[in-house]
Length: 196
Ligand SMILES: [Zn+2]
Ligand SMILES: [Zn+2]
Image (tube, rainbow, N blue to C red; front, top):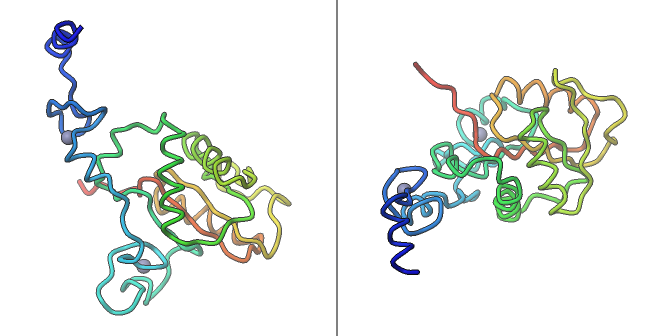
């Protein structure tokens, strides 16, 4: 059996999905797994999760003007090798999100809403199930709010896999029209505008 598995390794060497090095660990090599560590909320801007410049707990941009009407955090940093794990592992991705949500010490939401794309809906609903809170479809494909889906004076969590800031703005702005007390936005992999 050992001989057989070493032949399998020889024919199909297990490679790290991120750096393509040969490895004995599953999906990623040990150093890439280390790089998947969830960023510590204490070291980030408490409104948008950007790096701090040492002057209080808001970043320079948020001290000047807040770009989103929601407090935002990431589960993984943009360059995290966790991107290579694939969002089809909805349950696993939702578990990472749950760990980060606990670290963030955000209040328990009344319900979870997802950005209106397939991945955000799939992982967002798995995340809601893990938290044992309702999952509400409150956004249309065009980011419009679906009337009467949310209640005033409640706290909601908007789940995002990797939408652009422009789309997040559209959705968060239309949700804030329904007068929730507070919206928290949790992004699995923050979208990075590619500079060409
Ligand atoms: Zn690797
Ligand atoms: Zn900020």
